[in-house]
Amino acid sequence: MPKRPAFMIVFFLSALVLSLRPGPLHGQVFFEGEKSRIYLGLTYSYNNTSGKSFDGEFAFSSSGQYMPIPKLKAASGFSAVLGLRGEDIGVELSYSYAGHDGTLKDPTLPSGGTRMEKVGNHDFNIDLKGHIRPGSRLEGYYQIGLAIVFVSVGKSIFGVENEEWKTIGDVVYQAAGIDLGVGLDFWLSHRIGLTAGLFYRPLFFSTAKETLYEYAAEMGALDIDVSGMKGHSLGLNIGILFNLK
Image 1 (tube, one colour):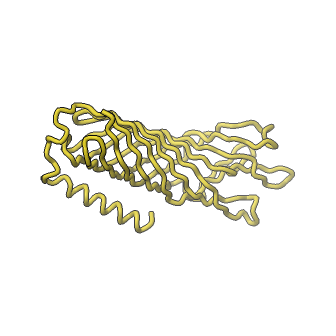
Image 2: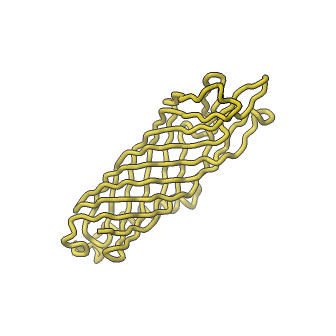
Image 3: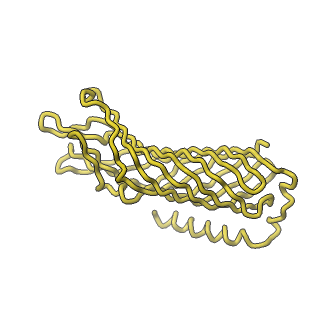
């Protein structure tokens, strides 16, 4: 990741440690008597997806088709959150999206050169979220959960037609992930709060679903086993929370 996000991570972790020390923000009376809360959230995220597979070199081939895996640049995105908060622990559902630029090897270019392609990273998550100093205005949290991830890459399937390489389709890679995160919620009022968190998500891919273009449709759409693919996401979320109850 670039130097600036690395500094942000160090700064955030330092703030988290300092926030857990006793102080006036930690009084247990701010949410006194409120045993449960339903909340919505919207966050800005900075996501870096990389790993063994997303290095610009890893590739799969099957049935005369070639699928190079792009090298992804870190990118910003957003997350939408729906949570149910108990006294000490809660459940959180979220959807995250980040649009990455990916460097892709293209056999249709001279000498198999590279090009840039937009890559969509879609994450659907369900997490258990535990709170440190629950009920106070400033709450630290930790979370663990599961993610279903879809990474879509356009113009990324190639085949040979009349002894020439041609782009014949798009692909969506499917993966399961494990969510690990820590962060802070700071409540400006009983209804509105600010949130900041750091997350890490190892990814384990299973299937690549192809969408072939019209002139390649006779080849048939295939689900290809890509269980050898692995990766991970690391990033920051900063946003706002709204208590509905």
